[in-house]
Image 1 (tube, rainbow, N blue to C red):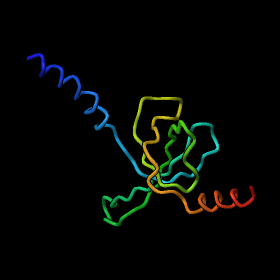
Image 2 (tube, one colour; image 1 turned 60 degrees about the vertical axis):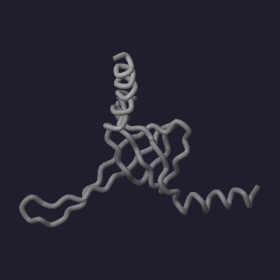
Image 3 (spheres, rainbow, N blue to C red; image 1 turned 30 degrees about the vertical axis):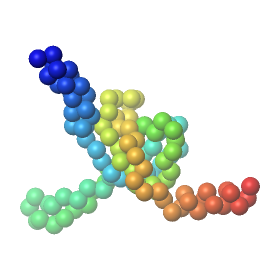
Image 4 (cartoon, rainbow, N blue to C red; image 1 turned 135 degrees about the vertical axis):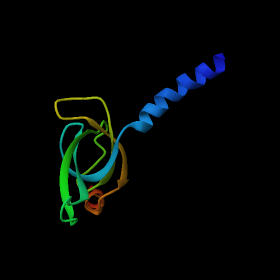
Amino acid sequence: MADTVKTAAAAAPEAAAARRNEKVGLVVSTKMEKTIVVEIEMRKAHPKYKRVMKSNKKFYAHDELNSARVGDVVRIRETRPLSKLKRWSLEEIVRRSSLSQLDEKAAVVEA
């Protein structure tokens, strides 16, 4: 009986984390400290005309290490409110931008 209570209690935080909403988008701004702006493109069929419409929405996400750069494709996860606009946190960098790789190489050559 005690074992089932422990396993249920241990599984609860994992289930809550897995239930949180995740989105994949493009980083459009990194000008703030520990904050990135991620733009998500959504495609949805028009209710009446059935034409696929594109719409964009920007989300502010917390980036603790300032590791994301403009142009990167990132995965963000919903979290508790961190500020007036920030409700998301950076989960992982899916793909690095080719522009940021060129900047790194140029910095190494100059040094």
